[in-house]
Length: 197
Image 1 (cartoon, rainbow, N blue to C red):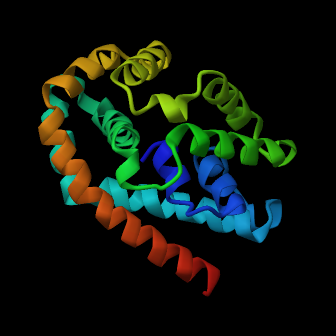
Image 2: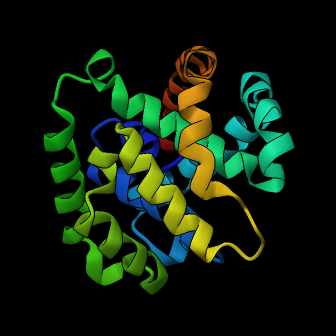
């Protein structure tokens, strides 16, 4: 899952949100590096990613992408799922997406002094371009994919992924719906286990 989903799957807990956001940017002895609730968020992030990567519905969605995008299918699927979450946000959350995004940015800013530099660079772009609110628009996905394509080591073709999304919208939407219910249940269960080991 990508940033919007990780934010949503933090279920309103600020420190869990921080950990969930930096999960891809930390290694080593996290228990001695961060507050215990941030560590819970980091471990939740890792669990979400593992669950997502092994889920049969996600693998099905990746299968239609693979002939065109190869190894980048996993990254693109994550972005697509954020798109569907953003696009149909009102079905999942009572707070408007713009307001939710602003609250996320403010929470991360509060903890900025203790977060990894590499994450803060990414977060600067995220906040400036309002990625979280933009993911629900096709043009937002186009901008994000084009930016990622420029940073990719190989010819990823990600700059065309918004066109593929538009062409296969209904198929991918069904896969997102089938998967998202499972990831919400998994995340709630994992969070409970991490808080009460």
